[in-house]
Length: 253
Image (cartoon, rainbow, N blue to C red; front, top):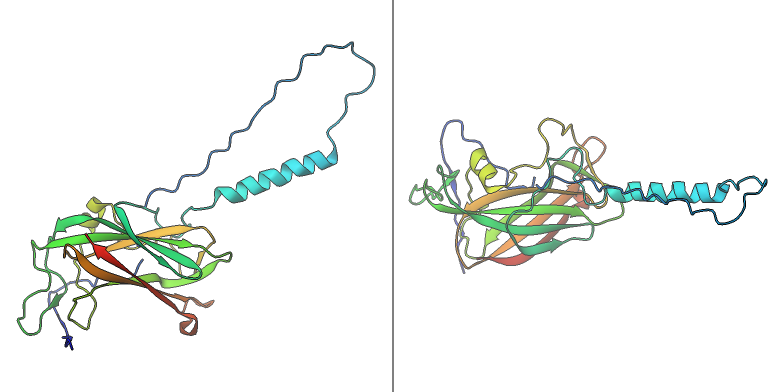
């Protein structure tokens, strides 16, 4: 039986804990609506004194209904107003399927750690991620696949990756480097810092948002991604008794 070990926190002044939560974007583009015009047919009969037939009320109502449906469809697949635009860099390696939402997991690429991680091995006192170590970035794209809006807490939907051979009780280590996240085309947190507002964050049907994270690169390693969502109450607090947890197995190439 494998004995898991605890991880000691690095005592680095000012070190910020990165969110392992999927908090996880291509600019959503509004669909263009093309208005078709029809040229009037050339008259081939003599004009009469009969008045031109006016459009019927039914035809007018039908056109209005069609326009409304087109307007509703235009919002499908867009990002919520409170989120930064969705990005989809990398190659999709897995999809987490829950009853009301999905999480597409993309392996984006690798980079050299620009700084040490947040944890050390308590036995060796060495950082789990040292500056210069190779790390891998992953990106998560979240989609509301239900027919109802989902109120989210500030944590949104959290995703926890764990290598099959991970020997520590705590989650996998990562580094905090906003510039490197930007270089990799990955958003570290999905809520727009300027327009996000406060919880609850309404996540409408069909809407998507994205966020990602990094961890030590282990080529060819089996890994499990677990997604967790606790909807928010009216005050933005989590409804833990309604929590959804679902996972998928994948491999880091």
